Image 1 (tube, rainbow, N blue to C red):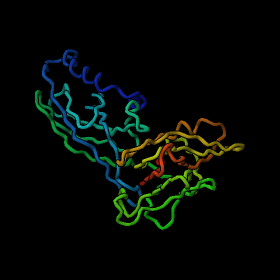
Image 2 (image 1 turned 90 degrees about the vertical axis):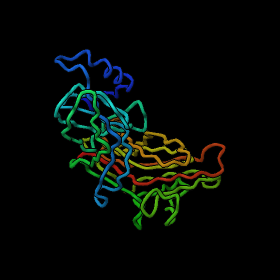
Image 3 (image 1 turned 135 degrees about the vertical axis):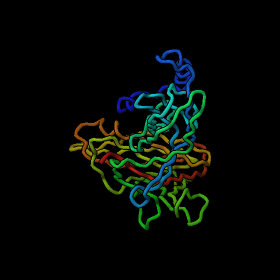
Image 4 (image 1 turned 45 degrees about the vertical axis):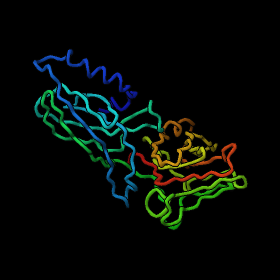
Length: 292
């Protein structure tokens, strides 16, 4: 299965076309496919150890008896050339960096495995499925803005600062508080970084976060080597039109782009958008996840 993790996401139209013509390309006496449907996949967590269960699982990567059937945007209904009892394995899929063309199965979410019975010309409905973080997932850092102190520090250059949304505020995503930054013509620059440096692991690293912003926000890394410090912007989070979104940012490539780098900090920063008098940036449930 690990082979498929490294492949680019197959366009859904191509998968649909392949599925429609597949019945002409199999051996045996089955001429009518069975169908499988999946409504959605949700995440269950142990909050104290793994943080929020907020997720944005958009796709299902489906295997039947270890045969790859396809990657399907949820909700999905698709044909399967099987009958009788078979093992269905589903890998939860996401949009890496929030980009539809870079869909992957997210290795930190557990595989879902069930035995299902397939009947030609009938639909096997799997409904709503649950995933969890894998046992090998390590949480390097988490910030949900509900503790007394924060693990993010504004830099000396920043003219804006991080606030917590008031208790009971409709601006809060979940829990008691979310992080909030207000930019205006006086406080027109914001920059913050994690309080601690973290060692660079020999493993993938993703940032997970919820955000809701009326201003573009840059997310990046500060990398520390034996001789240099590098500031590396990775992604610009665009305005969300007053809607909370979840994003999974791949930090791995940028971490390994410079020689002799041994540790890093996460940073976020922005200037007040041009032609704006005041903007608000909200964020919550920041996590740095990697393999243990």
